Length: 180
Image 1 (cartoon, helix red, strand yellow):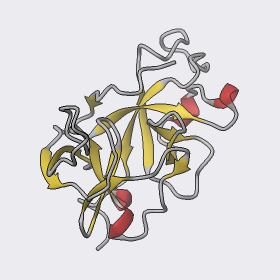
Image 2 (cartoon, rainbow, N blue to C red; image 1 turned 45 degrees about the vertical axis):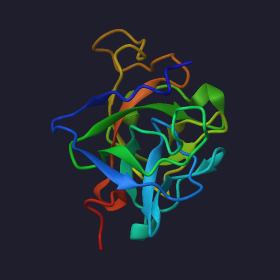
Image 3 (cartoon, rainbow, N blue to C red; image 1 turned 135 degrees about the horizontal axis):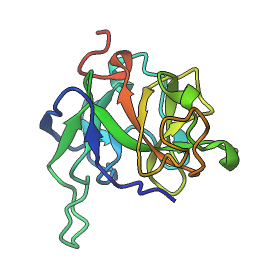
């Protein structure tokens, strides 16, 4: 399976990193996409759930957590602040594909430029949900060359199940650029 925890960034624009307060009781970990509630950062979705339809600022994506919600000293204490790679136009996140039909979770050329929802899979990592084209959050922008196993320059499908792709958080789904 592809590396789900990579915080790989690509794209034409540099990523900005900002710190935000952490919501009491939040349990997100490094690499999870986060939203900003009235009381601080929280996970975009619980494990095994899709990201919410980004129709309000309450569920728009802030970015991808660099720091976890819990202090990493063994105490289990809540972190006060967490750093986030900001979701903005031109910032691409490395993220694996997901489908409820595992054989369908492979890269195909038609995915580039297509908009999909997000899912926090049961194993606990975020993914591009190929089964959701209604509550769109991501647009696939490119394939991770390490996971796309078709011949270079071909238009055939890749064969790596749950392959990493590069995806941009859509402007309407981003807290930084979404409608207010």
